[in-house]
Length: 310
Picture (cartoon, rainbow, N blue to C red):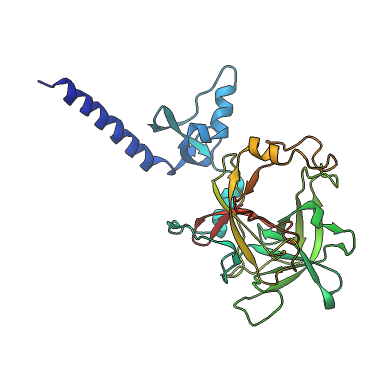
């Protein structure tokens, strides 16, 4: 006869085994019958598509992957188009188990192959004042305020695959481009810090290699706690710009803390404070952060050894 303790243990084993199976299924590929799209099995709470279905009246049931994590079912969630495109650039690789630690230090060769330097002025004397991220063969994602500067005019040049902008003795394979077109977010209005984002179109396609690779766009609202920033900006507020690409680890900061920290920012820049729907904060207790010259560069995290999301 099964005792009460044995019964409790049996129930616990079922619960644990169910969660283990769910963890094995989570992340597997699936196919969303309704939309005819490739999908991924994930927690319903992380799938905007599934939550939208449940909000409809009458509500509609998302496609179930067959298991639960706790009380949350795993559902087949359509993969964003940007993620599908990203996988054409980056075949599956082994997960990066141990994150690399950095803090205001020099980046390694080929460590950030999506990094772009944005240049201004004549070709004989280019000034590199902003950063950006390669997201496809011909497009750089950057900040809208980097498109036109007060003293040096429009952005005219982009350099990919470089590590130290001041030398050709480093382990790098730079590719230089002219800027053909720029596209600012339609709601961006300087000096406001809202919608400060833009695209830069190159004059030709970038050649992908170990030194030049596009990053993938993060499309879900939840973000990892641990992230990093990179740029050729000043190593110190009062210092000179760094010719060598720098990196620093920073952390996600919740909206309440972020809003309080920016409460004193000029009304012309943040008239409505920090908007949680379109902005997020990241920083470090030791003061690690971006500096002048880092504008337009990515806030990023790594999921594979050479695959960055931002």
